[in-house]
Length: 197
Image 1 (cartoon, one colour):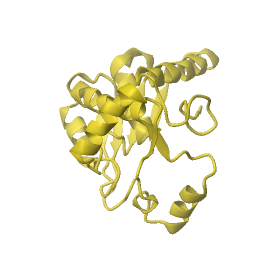
Image 2 (spheres, one colour):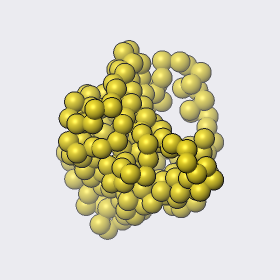
Image 3 (cartoon, one colour):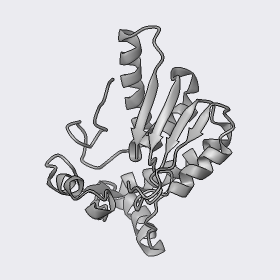
């Protein structure tokens, strides 16, 4: 198993909470995949992604289906459950042109992540967690969710979808819709009823 922090997150380099183009995440994932394939030739390779990582995993697999054996996603962020006011969204788009690296708080309440108080406390005290995103990240993220949702009808990779049924952050329905539109015969949906993100 190989795991890494996305650029601008955790211990990886790059401006915190920022990306210039969403496809940079696909390039980074390809680097990890290429490394794993080089070290373990002949083995099947599956990518696993949660939340934003799930969006990246599905987007990558839609673009380069022949490079992976399958995808496993939990609570993939194909759409937000928390809807942004149109004014705030318009501000983000405009600001991304004049101040692309302006960082704004995500506004995700820690208690929306888990029913377990210990998990919530660990999230709040995580010293490498960066709670903000840049305006450019927001615009790229919003566009990526739409593009990946639209790719469902031509998805060509086996996939296990596992949304949290009571996810307060990412839309479980968007995952169900992707699953319903996915034409690949090797797919499975496990909806974890009552669970958060």
